[in-house]
Picture 1 (tube, rainbow, N blue to C red):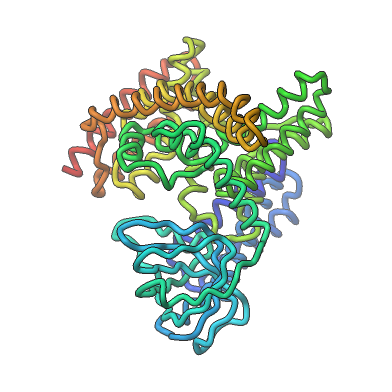
Picture 2 (cartoon, rainbow, N blue to C red; picture 1 turned 60 degrees about the vertical axis):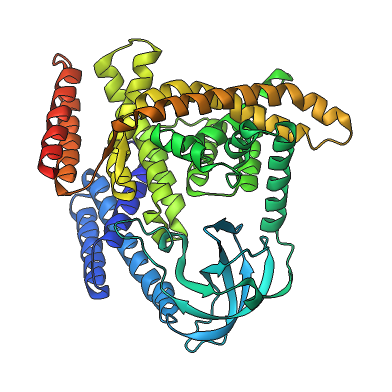
Length: 507
């Protein structure tokens, strides 16, 4: 690690992971935090500068464990004590409702409740309404709800706790919700603008291609059919449907390129890219992957404007520190872990792999990128979805070149389509055609690859975990071998043997 801030960031992030997933009592967390702080201070006193990285790691670990213990004691436990309580509750919708299987789910902020032992601060709750509830972000309602702990799928990932949602509420019908009014908050206004932009895309492309373009450019995935979702999932390119750094980076590059095309300076182009990235992130919602991309974009732009160099490890350490500093429990968000892990793979592991392989063309480079990302995120995918698609190599090779024109074309046709009169749609029509053709090609490629579903490996059982762990360890060892050793051959053979052994053990 070249800079101390990166060391602090990685120490903080990894220590939050350990504090969240290890079954430690509050007393054990306090002892661990005190011990780490004592070791860090002792290293500073005895070895001083020579032990500065180790001391920073210990101090960051102590702060992370203490932060986790404080959040659990001051925020999580007071809210979870309401489980089983009944009370008249005032809700405000904070996320767009999702309708599936005859029910409506949405996340709401509890402003006040008459339930016994209610905390004196607002908190989030996931509400399930049986039937169709016509609600929007910012709507306020009152209901009599019984709180309960959210259902965690068997073997699945806890997706609610990292988002600050510790309780659930269930209503038999929409009639149990008494509408109070609508609060025109900034989040509600941004949600309306996002829906208008997505509707502008679908108006110019009234087909399945338009739904795919609206999903990839503005995050409107509600209209996507289950067939398209399943094809993208099987083909290993479902990450293209979730807005991430790829989409935000394309929008930032579009803003910077436009400024350079108009004759602006490099500093002006960088500032324009950052501003456009922030606006795009605000419109589509600051999901963990978007937040990670925004932090990296702002960090890189700040370094450029201050005439400083940027190294990948420090940038990722700063990113992990910023994303979890406000909410230590966000470290367990699967979306954040997948986004952070894939970026770390590209920043930290890919250069070593490319040096081992050498310059062998774009095809080998794309395969190396996909392999490195799958190697780092494979265990998380196996734990959360129970499967790993080997079709991702071919899927990314076919779909990634088409993702850029789809996102940029959808963004431009959505923006131009909002202009008054016929000029808006006339100007946006070429971009809509480009995005629609690329989206159709991506859907066709995903549908073709989905026929090879036997290449989607079910990853269940302890043997698979042993195989994955051994393969990752073997790959890390191979990357540390001298240059004269054919590391790629050793890496491929070792990974195949470990995966095969784990597969046989699991069977």
